[in-house]
Length: 170
Image (cartoon, rainbow, N blue to C red; front, side, top):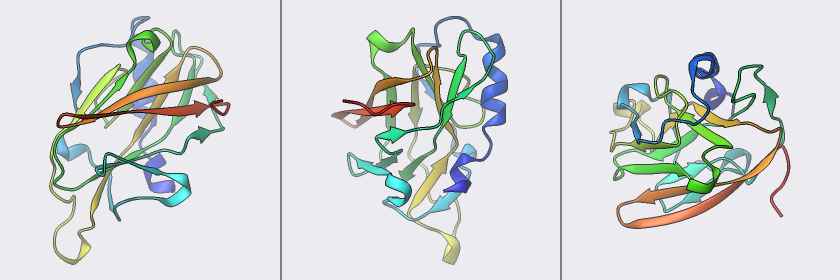
């Protein structure tokens, strides 16, 4: 899934100026930061469907790379795909994890603990339109590996999904 792994350099570069704790107020990701239109649900490479609206990375993401940027010294790129025209999606790091893990999706979000993805139409129109909008991004860590819980929300529905970064969740 190479297309979802594009455009991560700005996210890594923005880590240099971040405080030891990721910004906690939800950051809105504008529709113009969609990087690709793709099929939905997106299930390639182990992606999982959450709340019938968002395709999330696999449960285990092996490769974590060193950023050499404190405090978020490790990074794992992983895109999201959101069904075009879906209700707003929220993604947040569980409160107990916010000093250990941060997230970013979109090109200008920065390193945060919570994002909101608004209802966006298909990134392309006509015959090129597909059912899902892809966003570049991923996870920042203070340690080389973790089993990270993220809380996804759509309307009043919530789901906690775990991601094994650098090691499987047990």
